[in-house]
Length: 255
Ligand code: 13P
Image 1 (cartoon, rainbow, N blue to C red):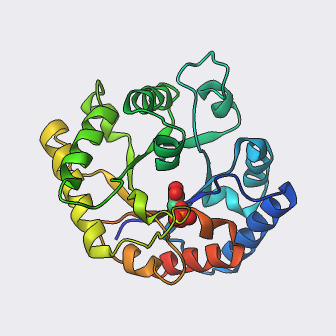
Image 2: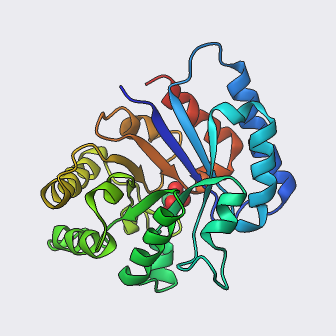
């Protein structure tokens, strides 16, 4: 079984740098307590304001060997008004979330903009974590997914698509949405298999890494992580609760 990947998408939490440090210290203590080889990797995606400090902590602590730094967004252009790829890489950011549903649906980020940000991440040699997911699981959800995938990856070579991690994050399952509920592993697998088929047909890629995201917590993480087609989880709310987050890592370490 391949190493599971656990991505912490902190969104706009925690409220202070001291709390961010606490989460990282708590995770560090847990990692130090492990006596055996670790079968997981961690990526922390803090809000931009904490990126520099988190970068320093990841370099100086035990986390250095297990945890990587990610960003929640990237500017389209390298010379931009926003936080750009070159700025992020200087801070040691190796991963970037692209097309998160809250950007797509709440901030109105179009497929075209997502596609340009994806190209920006690749140009800056970061690993893009590309979020794909339907807004509602109705009769047309597969058509929706296909359309979103084709537009998101438009103009990319097979080699470039092969450098992406895909996070299947159904919008209705994300904890910030009213009446959200986690997807079931079987229906997440149905979507992941469908997305994999599209990537295989169009780009001849069969070995994309897939994450599941949407209300992942310590109670349901095992049911997703134990599936061999699910390479990891993208965790929002539970990733800023240090006890919850470490429980999820612990589950991944035992799969
Ligand atoms: P929750 O885990 O809070 O549902 O958030 C999921 C998410 O949006 C992670 O990117």
